[in-house]
Length: 534
Image (tube, rainbow, N blue to C red; front, side):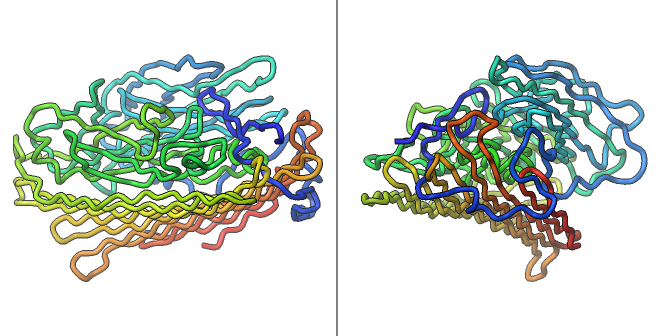
C-alpha cells in the first residue's frame, strides 16, 4: 500500500488521506497542455486566489467604514476586540458589506475560521494555501441582515486556528472591515438577531411574527467528517468508516420535535482530494464564504412566543454517536409585530416522511458502495398579528444518490454524487420554491513513479421562483461549476513535485434582478482566461 498523503488540515487537525489515492498511469502527459504563456509547472509563486462569483453590489453615495478585526493568526489564540457603530452614517443602512483581506506566505495548510459580533456568527471561512513567495486574497459578504447587531457596541471574537513551526511557516495576516451605506434596505431586516445560550435555549420576544434559524454547518476539524461524502459503512474495506455511510442531514428541533431538515453543502477545502494544486488559484464553491443553512421556524412561533425558554437543537444524521467532527453554530433572526405586545399562534401541521438511508457494499477487484437517502418534512402554523392571521407552511424534501468505487490499497478512488434539497415556503398565498442541487464527480489515481492525479467536477445550483397565485413575481437561477485536473509526484520534497494542473470556474446567476456570467481558467497557477458574457 502506498504511503498516505495529507489531504487537508482545518482548525489544526491533520487529515490522512489514503482515502483519496488512486491507481493506473497518471503522468504529466495525461494533463492537458497549458495555454500559451502559462508556466511549464507550478513554481514558487502563482496568481492570488480569485473566484468567478460576482462582487457584492454596493449603493452609490456616502459610506462609512469600520475595522472589525485585524490579527496575525499563529495558533489557536482568538482575536478579541470591541465593535463601535460608525459615526455619521445613522442607525439604518441600505447595505452593510463585510470584507476580509488576507495574506500569507511560506507553507501552510488550509484553516477554518469564524467571526462573531456580540456572540452572533456573521462570517465563516476557510483559507487558501500559500506559495513560498506569498499570496493575498479577499472575500466580500453582504451582512445587512445582521444590522440590528451592529447598532450598538459589541464584543468581537475572530479565530482562524493555525499552527506555525519549523515546517509550517505561514502566518495568516487578516483584516476585516464593515462598510455601511445609509438608507433603507431592499427588504425589511430582522428586528432582532438572537443566539442560543449554553443549554441550547432560546427565548424569543413575545410579539415575534416571523422566525428564521440559520446554521453555519461544517464538517471539519479532523477525522473523516471533513470529507463525509466519502465515508463507507462496515464491512467495506476503506480507511474512512462512519455509521451507515455518507448520508448526512442537518436537523433543527424545537423542544425535541423536528422543525427543519436540510442537505449540507459538500464543501471541498483548499487541501481537498489529496491535491492542493487544484485550489491554489480558484477555490471550490463556498470554500471562502460558508453560507448558512436557513430554516423557517415561523410555524412554531405560537409555541416559542410564550415568554419561556425553549430548547432549539441541531443534530447531523449519519454521524456515529459520540463522534465529533461537525460545527453547527445557530443564529435566530426575528421579525416583530410593532403594533402588538403579544403575538399568539398555533402549530397546525407536522408531517414527517420515513427517512431512507441505504448504503450497499459490493466487494470485488473494484470495491463499490451505492448510497440512496431521502427524507421529507412539512410543518405549518399561523400567527395572529395586528394585520390579521398569517399562515405559513414549510415543506422540504431531501435526496442523496452516490456511487463510490475504489481499488485495494485505495490507489484508485472515485465518487459520483448528487444531492437535492427542495424547499417550498407559502405565506398567505405567496409561495417561494427553491430547488437546490449539489454535484461531485471525481477520481484520484496514484500511478507509476508516485504520480498522483485528481480529476474533479463540482456543481452548486439553485433555482428559485416566487409566485402569488398563478403569477410569477420574481425568479433567479444559480449555476456555479468548477472543474479541475492536476497531477504531481507524491512523497517527495516540494521542489521535486513537478506539479501541473488546469482549473476552471463558470459562475452564472440569472434572474429578475439581472445577470452575471463569468468564466475563469488557469494553468499551473497562471490565469489563462477571464470571460464575461453578460
